[in-house]
Each structure stands twice: as structure tokens, then as C-alpha cells.
Amino acid sequence: MTFSLSSQNVFDYLRDLGLCEESDREQTHIEPKIAKNFNLLLSFPNRRKLLVKQERVNPTGKRAGEFLREWRFHKLLEQVPRLYHLRSLVSELVHFNEQDSVIAFNYLDSYRDLSDFYLKGKSYPTEVATVTGVVLASIHRATFNCQEYRDFMTEYCGDRFPDLPSYAMRSLDRLSPEIFGQAPADAIKFFVLYQRYDSLSKAISEAIATAKSCCVIHSDLKLSNILLDLDWDRNYHLVDISGNGKHSIVRAIDWERSTWGDPAWDLGALIASYLQLWLSSLVVSKSMSIEESLRLATIPLEKLQPSIAAFTEAYLKHFPELIEYRPDFLKRIVQFAGLSLIEQIQAAIQYQKTFGNAGICTLQVAKSLLCRPEQSIPTIFGEAAFKLSHLFCVPA
Picture 1 (cartoon, rainbow, N blue to C red):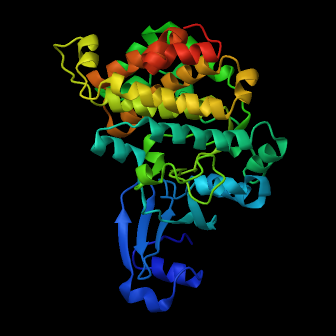
Picture 2 (picture 1 turned 60 degrees about the vertical axis):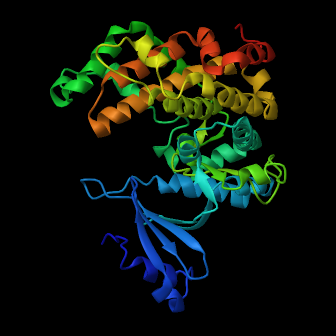
């Protein structure tokens, strides 16, 4: 019989695991959190908080089993002494129940997600981006080209989780006539435009085919999956940003899609998340050209470029082995950013059933990044493009 968590039974569930005391019941506050999974936040009288998550069942009554990936990643950091220091850079797992797809974490309420920080603060300090780059590089570098870690990441999951992320756009090359009868009218615009750009399809295929899996990657990295210390500005010079300390002002969370893969995917995905701040602020109208919409964005790309560049430079300086292993890594990052934007368009079509002028602008940007990555480097990195290109031997 399938076990389903609820606000009524979650306290008993945690008490039976020894994660809370019966005496705390009356003073414990239980709050549902809106998300793709069923999430409950429990606040205990001792000020400790736990976030408990259960995967939702699909129409067939089954669950996807993504939490197994998250557990596997945390288990790796727990069991390998050389990786123990990375635990301060990620979420804090306290419980996993594979049979019922339940997972629980210490809720880090002294942090806020980076998307919220940027959107509400309207500022983009390069110090935050620098630490983010170092944190990601620390994780990638610590697991780089280690067969032991690769084997561990696949031991519990068999062939269910391939080396590369499960790119949604693979299906784009297998479009059938039926899709045009199932998709909403707005979504048809995307498929028509995609099929019109033969170079885009070739660029996507090339990017996927030439990916090199060499370390543990997050595979779903975005600003909302990066947590920033509420007192980051005060603590910035007081903590060890290399990941060797007990506290980090930046943490990467939600490792449900973690896998053994190409690190360019993580960097490209996070850069695409920065670009979405710009693209989601576009002023769009049928009477305006795409160029005009891009120019009138309420969050200009010029404001984001220094942070994107600082993030990338800090990452590469902290993980210099990638320069020799993959001399074209900067180009790859740009292409994967375009790939991630395509995935975001597809997600909007799938869940929101829309593809309007903003989506068309995003597609045009994604096409440029994928098909002309070298020429797009100045667009992404701004004034730092020459420095990065020269440093990593990529023609500007």
C-alpha cells in the first residue's frame, strides 16, 4: 500500500524516526510549501526546522524516484573522507526513505535563494558570483576523473540514470505529425521556428555528441538552487570560500538530478539562469522588433555581465585542470547556456502552454549561443570577454 505524507501524519513519521520528540507536538508549526513535490516545513520549539519532501505520484500511481539521486550524492560525500569538506557547500540531508520516496533536510533559514536575492535587491555584486564559482569548482574538481566516484554514482541506480543529463530537446529531432494536433497553438510557433533553423538542430546535436562526462554535476543548476547567507556581506571575509571550512556563504541545493556528467552543463545552466533575469524583463509587443525588446529590458544585460564573468573566471581559476582537459571549455559553456535556454522554453510550453514574443526572443538568443558561440562570448561576458578569451586561448 502506498504511503502518503500529510500535515496530519508527518509529525508521527518524524517522531518514529527519532527526529523529533513527542513533547514538541503542540508547539510544532507545520507549513505546506508549494513546489513540484509535496513539501512540508516543520518548525520545532527549539528553533530547528526540517523540510520534508515526498515525490508526487504520476497518473499510473508511481513516483519518479529522483530522490534516489539526491541520496546517492549525499552518501558519496558522507562515505568518502576526501570529499567530506564539500558537505558545507550543499544541503543538509537527515533522512531518506526510498520505498516511499520521502526525503528530509535541515531547513537553512539563515539563507535565501539567489534568485530572490537578485530580484528583490536589484543589485548583482560580483563577490557573490565569485564565491558561487568557487563553490561549484570545488565540487567538480574534487570528483574530477575519478572512476571510484563514477562507479559509486551509478551503483545504486543502474542504467536508469545515464552519464549525461536527460536533455529534453532530444525529442525535437523526432517530431511527428501527431505533435501538431496535441500541442497548443502558441507552442506550434516554437516547433515551426525550430524546424526552420537547420543550423540550430545541428548545433544541438553537436553539443550533445561532444559532451565529456568527467565529474559529478548538479544537472539542474539555476539561481533558485543556490542559497546565499543572509549576512554574506558581513561574513564574506570571515569564511573559507574554498569549501574547507564549516560554513559557506553559498550552498548548492536540490541535487535530485545529480549525475556523472560534463561540467560545462552546470556552468551553462547557471549562466542561462542569469540570462533569464534579463530575458524575463523584456518589454515585448507585436509592434516591437526583437532588437528593440532586448534593448528596453528593465534588467539590462550590462548589469548582469560582470557577475556572469566573475562567476566563470572564479570557477576556471579554481579548476585550472579543465583548461588542459578541455581547451574549448569557454565555447562549450556558451553552447550549453543556449541549450539550457531551449530546455526552459520547452518547460514553459509543457507546463504553461505558452510561447509568445518573450519566448521568441529567448529562442533567438539561444540560437546565437549555440550556432555562434565564439561570436557570442562578448555578448555574455561583456568587457571581461577579451580577458577570458585570452586566458583560455579562445579567439574573441
